[in-house]
Length: 141
View 1 (cartoon, rainbow, N blue to C red):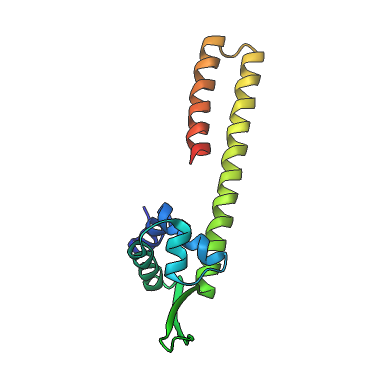
View 2: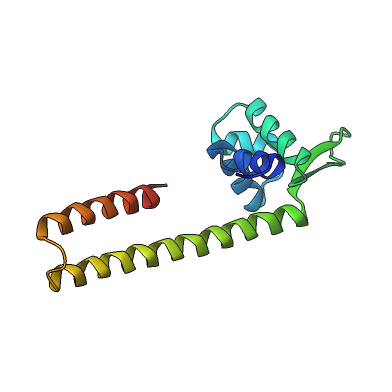
């Protein structure tokens, strides 16, 4: 079981809306209005995610001067936020690759067992169906 802080960060990062906001930030967008227009969501949704990401240390909030004289508040990924996201992506990629290798290994083992007549075709088909279902769950996420 994950500890509270890790679970809180991952829970928020797992949100599709949060991922969309992060994607906009990674693409160079920095203002909530621009992000909300790009994502076709209300500004409050974007603000909520940016505030949460800021509290988690993943984004920084900064006021910059503008032509209207009123400061413009922008957001950007922190270096730690960038590093965290890259690390998560890398670790998940490695984990996924290992899962796929394990599915392939299990499939090959079932093929060998069937070829040696260690298991019946009925048992083979049942186990292959279960394995394909598990693999489908992993691949659909």
